[in-house]
Structure formats: C-alpha cells, structure tokens
Length: 193
Image 1 (cartoon, rainbow, N blue to C red):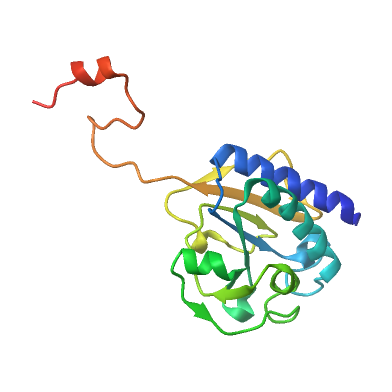
Image 2: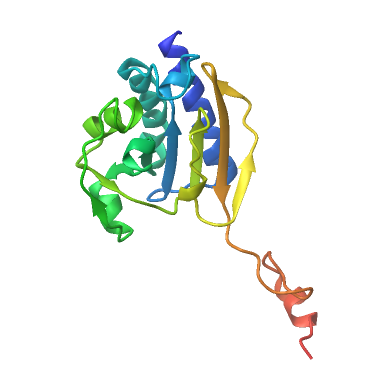
C-alpha cells in the first residue's frame, strides 16, 4: 500500500466533504478509521501506525486551511469514544472520559491522533457537523441530525469502503414553510392570513 497515495486520497475526500457541507472553522469533523480494513484485512486485526500516520496527514492538510476540529473515533474496545483537542471539547461543553487509546484498545488511528493532536483528550460522544467513515466503523452515532450522505469521487481508501455525510438543520413547518431566504418583494406578497 502506497502511503503517500493514502494521504492524497484522504485529503481529496476531506476537501470534497468540506466543499459540499460548507464545513467551517471551529466545526467538528468526526473520522472513523479501520487501518486494518485500509490494508485489506478484517477490522481490528492488522492495523498499523504507519497507515494511521498517512491518513492523519491527509486530514491535517485540509484542517490547516479550514481550521475545523478533527475528532477521531476509537474502536469498540473504548466504546467508540472520541479523540479530540481539549479546546474543542471545552468549546462544545463535552464531558471527558479517562483512557489512553493504544493500537489494541482504541485502534491505530485513535492512538496516533491522541499522540499528535494538541492537548488531546477523550470524550464519550459528540454531535459532529460532518463525518468520514473509512472501513465501516459506524460513525453515525456521532453526527448531528439530519445526516445527508455524500458520494465521494473516491469510493475506497486503500481497500476500505468509504462513506461520508454531513448534517443539516431539521426542516420544520408544513406546506407554507420556506427553507431559503426570499427577496423583500416575495416576503411582502406572501400571506399568513
């Protein structure tokens, strides 16, 4: 597996998701990764820190430009807790939990992120604005409602299946509800009587 290609592919899909979703500075991007799946192995069996490093580099290339907060999901052995920077956890009022992710309990990606994010910590749950799932790690529990699937130009990272989504606000109202801003004239001619 060519690690530089992994980094480029991850950077490409993160950019695509950011463009489609309008991901902004300070928002949360949850990232679930099975480095084992990336390498063509069964989830949780063969993960490597080198693969995690390549994926992290792709995320980081976009994060440096857009200033979103990357949030890396741990594996099931840490109950899919999340690695993030402490200032992000504090900004969103998240409760911290205690554990140190390692390759065999948390996963290679979470362990790598924990050691490379600035002042990393763990939280049990988030409601992220967007998410990337590399290897079917089930990030959906960590997305805000309503999740909108995104079809990336790249369908897999290495050998791992790739899915992405972003969250949009719920559409409320009934048949009279409007979901896009109107011109002043359109607003004046409408009636609520």
